[in-house]
Image 1 (cartoon, rainbow, N blue to C red):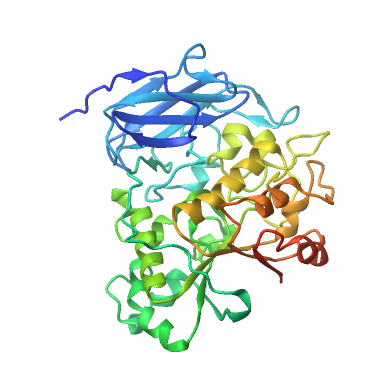
Image 2: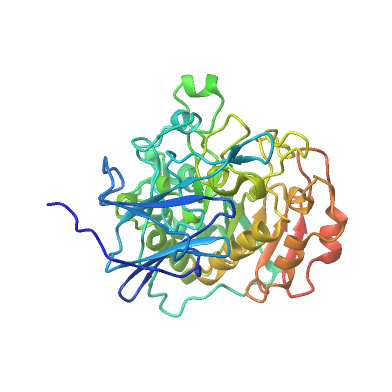
Length: 409
């Protein structure tokens, strides 16, 4: 039976992303130079066609640089993506709008990867039949009084592990190997080790197809997860039922179970680059929405991505909007997901200015330090980047003013 066409209201620029509210869902996306914006709604993550395409209007659906719309009565469990049109000027401005490209919402709480074909996203034009999609989710959760643990850093015994690798072998004897749920079953083993924290290798949604071509030909995938594209979404490959948009619930179940066992949760996070790679990499979200601000681009030829990470691009972390995005993301994982700390991959890349220069007082790092929501969060910095910039002393000198624990590794 075909889905109904839902009625619309103007919506609000805040909050960004898709927010389920009483009476429907508010959608908002930031794009300064977009000339036209469409929201596509799907019944399932792999539905071949959208059941409704919503064309936003500049005069009613745009506030400052945010495009927004409220969809009446739209339920949780609906899948969606964006299409944006605008200038295509890679060399002149770094803008790469493609009105046919299906784009993920950078603020999405749950994303798919079932139909994803990286090669299609590397080419111009319509990738709708092979693109990832976002899910509208109900973010309510019964924490049962849970909150981040208050374990002093000098008492910490941290056990680093990979969610998939820890339980994927049959010898782990878990019901759901390679998932957050599988890790819950191994908590008694972790308790027996006497640890205070687990440090989870990247669990934010990443591109498993981001591997060299010769590696892909061998049938191998990106295993470690250092190729994030959706920073607010737990990785769908670590979920039991991602097709139902259960990402948040499954990760929260893990955190609550670990906390009940007296074990804190530290996330290895990768904000220094994304899985969109360089000029010839895929367009997943940032590159097709506002690539001119999200990445370090050459000032003479903006089609050139400056690469201080060895991964094809570098996040322009100290642009005001990008800094806001990063800090909001960290606060979200603490406030809504109850994590106890972060280990920042190639943290020195976050201290570079828009021209790649090393900043003495990087706004994003000061923003993290001065965030009240992050005040009791453990912060661990890998104090270098792939272009040779190290700032171990600077991390140690500025950390701890608000009660955080920061370490240079």
